[in-house]
Length: 120
Image 1 (spheres, rainbow, N blue to C red):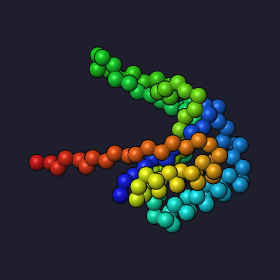
Image 2 (cartoon, rainbow, N blue to C red):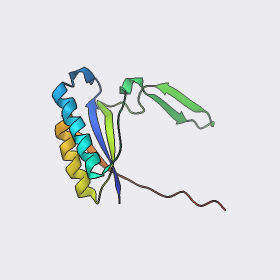
Image 3 (tube, rainbow, N blue to C red):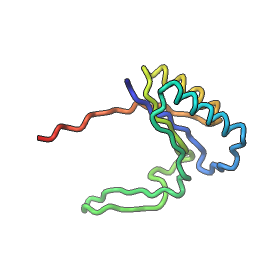
Image 4 (spheres, rainbow, N blue to C red):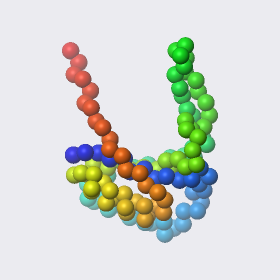
């Protein structure tokens, strides 16, 4: 079955303290529902984008390490689910529930999986 990333987007200045008990319970309830349906493979929240580290290969072969997110943007991924569903429509149905529970925009992306080559 295909896998999908369901990513929650937060504004760059998102304050997690704004998450009230009702919102936390709705997200927890959605997680329990995903687990019971057998579609949730992994879920997690991410720290603030401002605390990220970005690495980029340089032409001379060195790696440049910088503080902050790779892309300067007004919003960043704040959390995500990895779902295994029958098809994209089912992933979108779960994403609709995530929009409501998280009170934030959600993005759904296919996860491409290519098995590792067998060793000789």
